[in-house]
Image (cartoon, rainbow, N blue to C red):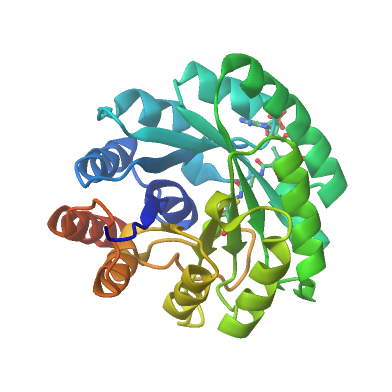
Length: 284
Ligand code: HMG
Ligand code: MG
């Protein structure tokens, strides 16, 4: 039986949060609805974050209310604090994600809090989600490089991964936020992190600034990871990570892992249409 890879589509969130043009909710809804037909099991739709910090995500509730949910798809959102979690619950999110950083500099820039304080803020989200039976995914940003602090030691990543594991996150996604990770650095990081959480519960989240994201996918595959975050059309970046380019494109990861013999359950034609729609949204 062929081995499987799951692509976790993050385009509507990670992709669109960084666009200069204010994209109408109707366009975001159309993108999510098209993605719902492509065979993804999980789609990250939006973030319930402060609109002062990320104006592009101010329409989170409207987008969640407007999408047509396909059976078997988990519609995921980002939640930075309890207020965000409550918004996500009210909107009927199937799962939420908490997001920490392995570097202090990015943590402060992105969450206005150091790593320890950000983790304290996540505790009530995790408690509420557990009581509500809502799965929580964890993100760690800057797993190899930080735009403010430079190279990030693997031990620092492992510490935050362990904290998210102890919170009960069902999976931890490892973000090369600025997309400058080399395969060697990614491999060293994965070796250390796998001592805390088994590869089956880790995901690779590669941005492609340096053009090495697919090589980093290969390194992660060799380490046993089978889940990769990606954005159709290579949309994306983080407004608090200067110099970060888009996520690795879903269609590129799909072609890459398919050529390597993995099953994804995705319909390449629909993914291609969504990539085209995403690129059009970018230019308006
Ligand atoms: P703060 O300014 O310290 O917090 O921000 P605050 O409590 O003072 O709130 C500021 C204002 O926002 C207040 O409004 C709050 O009410 C409001 P005011 O009273 O001034 O009118 N507010 C909210 N509004 C709606 N929903 C909320 C919410 N919370 C507060 N949930 C805070 C702290 C965490 C809120 C802020 O820093 C924030 O929202 N940060 C999120 C930044 C973000 O979304 N970054 C992008 C996602 S992470 C990423 O892209 C990386 C990833 O892809 C992985 C990778 O690539 O590495 C995941
Ligand atoms: Mg990202």
